[in-house]
Length: 150
Image 1: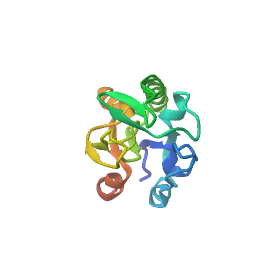
Image 2: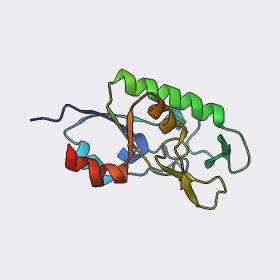
Image 3: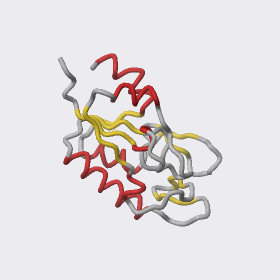
Image 4: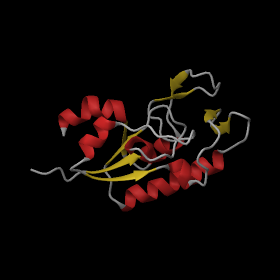
């Protein structure tokens, strides 16, 4: 029986060069899984108007701040809303995200010190998805746990 589930995926995971550095986070195992599935790719940061490449950002006291101190919260929130609209329009039931990102990080994000330290928390887009009742899982957890149940 074919899988009728619709997935939404962080665009960097399928090889789109939309990461802050201008690169991607291509995840070959995820691409292999998605080969015969229905899915859409989203990048909330680009949808919010941020450039590629762009300065690294982290969440600091509920604001998204660049490494040089610029408040980028507006762009992150706007992009999160646009990405949420896209996944709702596509009727995606599961969102698979890139870990640690200030947009797409699920369960763990960088602590705002720009030192690579992780804390419990979610990125702006993931928070919005949770508020909308949409299931979000980071790519590693998805491939480790969820694939077995589908």
